[in-house]
Image (cartoon, rainbow, N blue to C red):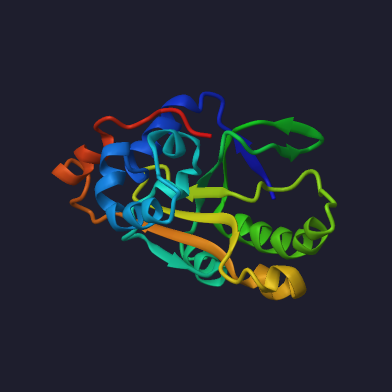
Length: 203
């Protein structure tokens, strides 16, 4: 798969966060029931937790939580070049060099094929603590340049038991998210609330 690194990622990264990640204030509103449940269970959700969490942990709960098959189908329905981005905390290896965080662009269909192949090929090895270098990171954000949609591929699965005894089943149950904003969404009060007080630091 051919891809190109984006040299200056700061502006695009901040724009992505503004479009798809809830600010701390908005997060407390959108996830108030879950926050209350966690507090009752002795695990309070604080602003420090928010700052250290994955970007997909801080997304709107109204975004569709889907299987990897559905997320791949969604990505393959978008022809042409797409952008993909990592989490800052994830080490990624490409062409023998280590990259802490990056944004790159590639063909949508080719990227979908690589995501699918690498996840299945590496999942069993990962369970045996074997790291395949020169592979995509386990948490990946794919989006169009105008940021009207985003497909998130996380390192989590929706079947914890299968992670222990059935690697192939666990791989199929990869936890993914599809984010689509209505055409008239940007510039609305809800969008402004996402941006207001948004945090530029991700972990």
